[in-house]
Length: 334
Image (cartoon, rainbow, N blue to C red; front, side, top):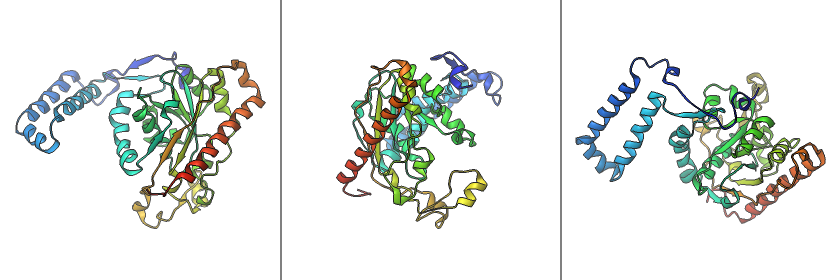
């Protein structure tokens, strides 16, 4: 049973304070006392010091932070039936990822106007880089560059949701299993849904095969778009391939750990923990022109030839754009 079938689509629930058993007694009062104590400290000498260090305007940020803290303590926040916590995503997750997108990878975002202002849309992108940073950076790019600050709801592999902590974070960030039912439910409620059809074959391919798209599967993402009648936006990402150049694979260790691969890169495992630091490549994320599907009847999703043709069209569009961006690129790092 999918998450979408557990509750009515579009419904939201308020997380009650009782769901946080580590808090007892008049928790809202405790939250107020904490906020008052911190506010009082900031109003004194500490506040003057903060002004010198952070400059003017820090008070508003501090107030927002205190308000966020209070809502977290009291449980006065909402999640949807997929587990998406919009406030936590904006205030914490995206805030942590944003410096990497802006300062480290220096992402050049193009074609953001091809993502509609409202309504469902399916983003289909190439997958690469050994570690799926490309999906996270795409989430930041869409939210920060789209004029309506839209959230990307990614479809992820089962492995993501069985990993400790990672699965819970993924749910809170709005992502769900890569299955047709969940994809269609999100598209029908007007969400921006992202899919990386290459899966582990894409992110785990050898560096020698960089920017060569792997097989796109059976086109399940196209069938979901057809049933929902939403446009498909091809997305081409250049720069992620070189963050962790995969020159080998510990296949035996991967089988023992139940993982699709254990990479060998020029820095990992030779440099230990430092080998996990991605190379500071220069990225480009380009969103192509939408491919409309609303001219087809929902039953068209059951036509295998149509699904195959649309899948091939999306794949060829992404591959052609990748080659074009690579020709235009001056350097991997600049």
